Length: 425
View 1 (cartoon, rainbow, N blue to C red):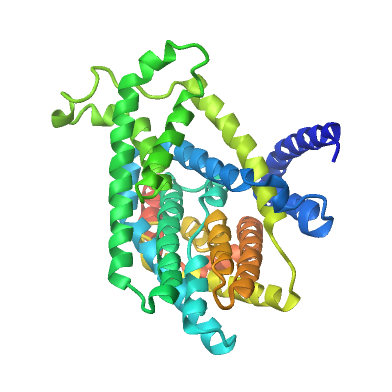
View 2 (view 1 turned 135 degrees about the horizontal axis):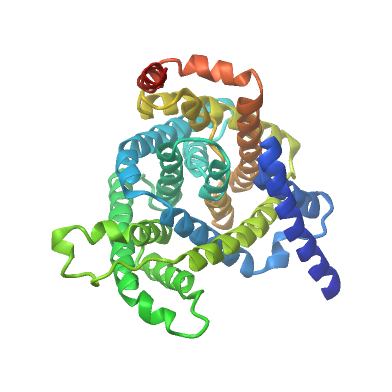
């Protein structure tokens, strides 16, 4: 396309993104879904843009988007809420990932005729949830901060587990056996060491922030520091995304760490975190990156084989059925019924699944083409399912169905509400 046409399209897309945000606030139809549909129209349907059009920038742009989204979401985490969310986060993450991988693997093995390793590799690839979808979607929904934190942390941790397990199964084709102990050790080391890198970097950056602000045009230096942190941690073999989350969470709660006696000698005299103009700027950056990220996801989706699309839709339905017992097992019984219902429909797939799905094909593994086609369709279908179900739970009888499934939840909260009503009367 002509340069002027490209610029016209970019400006139009930004205006549409703002309009879609307004649509979301009025109708609960998520803007991420509408942006993905635009990408599908531009890519697979009209063939005006292809993933190759982005060249090497495409994967880099996707990584940058996730880094900034995770960092900005980490900044908004409350440390007290974070502590309370650790147990349900780990339980939900492990339950949902294992149930998804096992169920999808068994279906692929017995019903689709795939080899066991390919089938379970598919289950591992689509076993995580997408922070790029979860974060903007949950911010528009009226749920408790603890529930929002649990969903956000699950999406960050599950990406790590999905990547390590899927690559471990791919490596088994080369080494001839599955190294389960090595995979578990790598997951634990990745989460702990990446978290330590993120926390230490937050302390360092808090100490430097006042001096950095004295520089001219310094408002983008904090995101730049996050990129440096991500690159170093990834080159060391750990998760840069987890480091970005922890960096944001520690920097956003730096005043809490100043109250810890044994840390007071190591930290500057005054706790320094991002000021409001810096946070507002970061929010604008997130909005722009999110807009073009989901268009890119839509462009990248392939619908080349209709039977495989049908398989993907069936697997997506299975994933959302599995999500119900995962939420039921993981969440505290004091969780409000509505929150539990929303957790049970939050299972969108995203960038990690798209990237992992391309690796078997590039390595010429058996079934690589089919696995990629199914995964791409699952990514889109899962975003549609999440968006549609979140709309239906807020507007239709579906809320009553999920309320019945989670009828044992929210009892303590309900009794407290009743007591407060009695006291007020």
